[in-house]
Image (tube, rainbow, N blue to C red; front, side):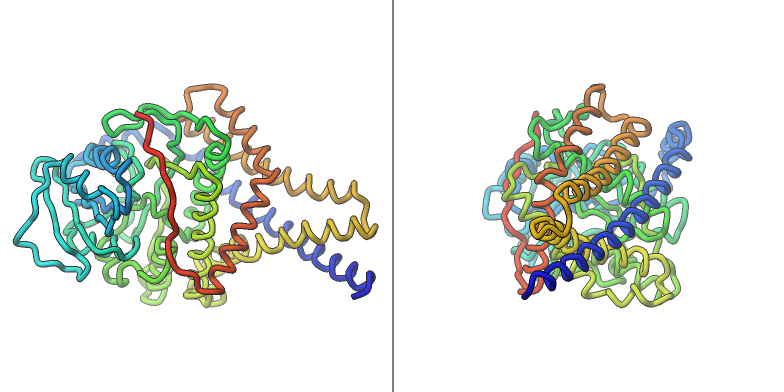
Length: 464
């Protein structure tokens, strides 16, 4: 291959990356405007009045379903938090998905559980069901089948109107259910509601409650804090307002149980069961002319522990990428069919652009610009200027999310928190962003070679 040919292809890639960057910029600019407008229209007084009015006997019943696999370090604190919800009528179902550590034994010892003899398993993988009349807690013990299968096992036992799917290593704030249930009361077409998931690393906890918001003390979780603020306060909120929210995080979501069961429950052959279910609900709703409203509410908060090691974080991000690709593979036709509206061309289309095309193009752009600089087709100053433009845009988007947190949410009492987050947002562009794109590409490769499995991750307990 001649130098002229190399330069031609490098310039072609560079132009493709530039066009993609413009599209990304316009898209995220739209999301920022939509999210910011939504926040400014909300008032804390209105939300407080709603919260008081919700304490009535007409509240729908809720079952909190929490799959657990090898969560011995965090399971007791998390279940204690789930049992302290400020809600009239709910129960907690923990599904021990074939743990190989002492998760089940720890639960049995901490919550006075007894085996229910008269139970006929409604799910073939269930080995035993334990109940605690003292705590209003049910524990299902089953063979390992993955998170989707564990949630289906919980659904087979639940009898409530709504169910809340949550990671058992997460901690719900006491009023989370009370706030998340409101969209179901506002509009009967609501099928699922997403709340905010926040990084709990470094947050002190007592008796199952996060006492106050603290930033992580190490860099990797701190950068993830910025990512979560950006994803929930801007992207999820904006997509919800546009009718194109395509994922309710597996860490915390509230669902209409009958609608989910009618849709077939969770798939067990994907690692992205949370996103796939939401896209399927959109699809079935449009096909049956019964719109499925998927809402995001910022105030309900779930605290989760994020990975503290690069190896664990890479495992998580590769799995997320595989889940997105599996969902697009199953439902990609929605993008080009008009009857699916914003959920199709905008929601699923942006998922394909951002999660599939975007990482590959960005990496290709770095390589192409470097090749052009080495061959003298562009100067090194232009190369670094292009890098600065890409980095600046990412930083500004993160800064907008941090500003929304400071102005509208105000969870951090420490005034220096915003400065620390801005510092992490700046550092994110130098190494972390590049390795994240590598993980996404690795996830694409895993999808192509049909890699299976969830992957092992090490989690630390909350600070008590």
